[in-house]
Image (cartoon, rainbow, N blue to C red; front, top):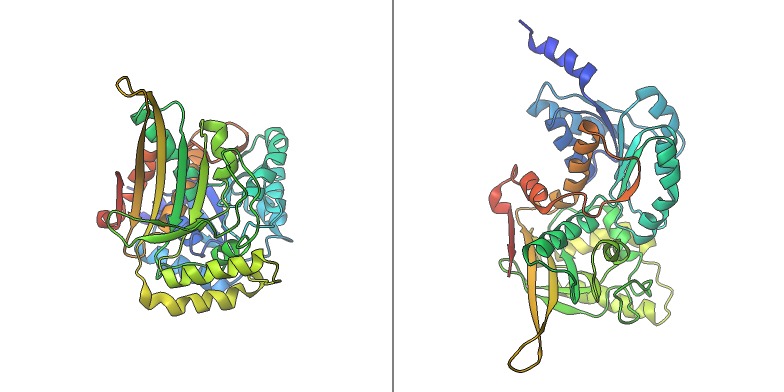
Length: 390
């Protein structure tokens, strides 16, 4: 009869290994815990050994049989060496911000013959990843970029409503995300937002006019949480979704729960648009701390909406065009919002590690179904996530 120690030794040999870069961060820690729970061997990477070690101990306290290793090293100078030594089957890159980041990490991973996933929410980075497609094919490697809320969840929602309502063409799609004011957020997320505020956004299919970051403000009501002010936001969806869906007009926005904080950022966007040399991204650490001054004005509740409008043709009686307009919502309470961006990497990692996936670089569009996404969230308190269409 095998003892627990024997089973653990066997697990070390057979369990596929995943290296999570930034494995103890806001999203990396959630991915690490989930993959350990699913029985995979996870290598936690990061710059700070004590933080990585603390996460390892917390995981082992919950499940002594979990396979988790700490390996702290500089990913830009030592990644290739560590990949050869530790031989993971998959690398998950969570070290943002991806804005202005090159594809060195992905290229190094692919050249080593290791599968790759990143959580990039940057349009330019996701586009640049396509240049590695031939390299990935040559090395027989699967590389998934944009494995985050957008475009993974947003495309899953559009695929769901397209099937549900038999939609062939979307007249308009409006997507928006707003975290709770008290929700945990990291420096990388802050830097990402500050990188495009007040700057002209690159045109995209379905763009009707020139748009600037954090402008074109509108008020979005949610079914159960506070309403949010929303403004223009950069996202891979702007370039990716039209490849898979027929969308006449597409917009993407983000917003803060604190309307006062949102308006202050909006004011900064105008100052930058008018030519003032404000380097907000440079001051991201201080601005992140400052944003916490507004926590008393908010909650831990965040939300995402996907509004879609579809033309139904002319009515027989009055010969006027009829349309249907509905909105899909997901709301996260209890500081559980950061679980949502972590889900795509978890689900895609499980697929790559357990079944054959075609080689090459793929945007994380329509690779995950809405049903699978919501099922993965069921392991958490069911009261924390509410999904509906209105």
